Image 1 (cartoon, rainbow, N blue to C red):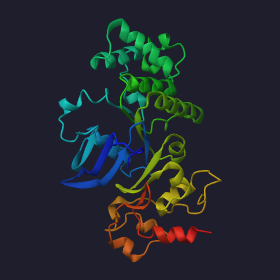
Image 2 (image 1 turned 90 degrees about the vertical axis):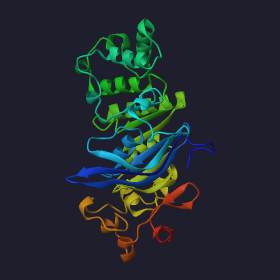
Image 3 (image 1 turned 135 degrees about the vertical axis):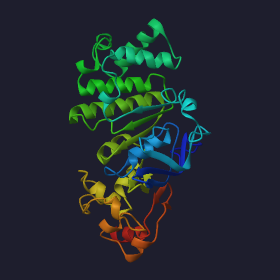
Length: 332
């Protein structure tokens, strides 16, 4: 499933993540499988609570409190990450895999100048030290579009705007030239103009460096701009994955159709026709398809029979046994 013909950089097989609920464990991510090619940007989409952020963080050992990886395998450049200890993961995190979280303020140390925070990242991974590290920091700040980078390096986080803070976090993330960058809703808290500039920046960095990226977002409009492929999650399961243009112009799962219908795109074949109804209720999911209670096309079989991803066209997989029928109905 890699974006090109070579062996993918990342392969996820049947990843399952549980959360502690009182005295029992409950699966919030169930048997998720996908890959990320070298130089590819994969989008992970879905409504809030679908498990996309939990999936992304668990892949690289960033487990939230009260959670555990209950099964599966995550291979990064041929190495099984889930079998590594925190100590073994330390040289990988930040150097080969980096994270850009949704809230930059939660990542930056309030009492430390932002330039020093980049320097510590560079020194901690043995990339550079002393004056060379500070020179590299100023260079990075210029690369991510911060004005007067030498002056910015001497400021504390609270002296920067939200957009500037996020650019500092991106500078930290790319400082060691990682192979993979994980972006968890990095533009959600920003205004539209700042968001657009950051998306342009991320696209430029990716094209210039050749790094791979996993971009997590509920905003399909954002994913359409920046991703090579998009994977859609619902209720902890992957329900569709395809090249971006294919997914937006020929969505095959009813849930994906509903998500895309909310994106203003007049040229899309299915846009504006199938609005989502109701809300995701994890406490009342059927044994079959989790989307069945909200699906306008559901049949009794949908509620009882679990469905797995099936390739219906080259590089296009969907977990919906009605997908061929719906495609036929939509055909002119």
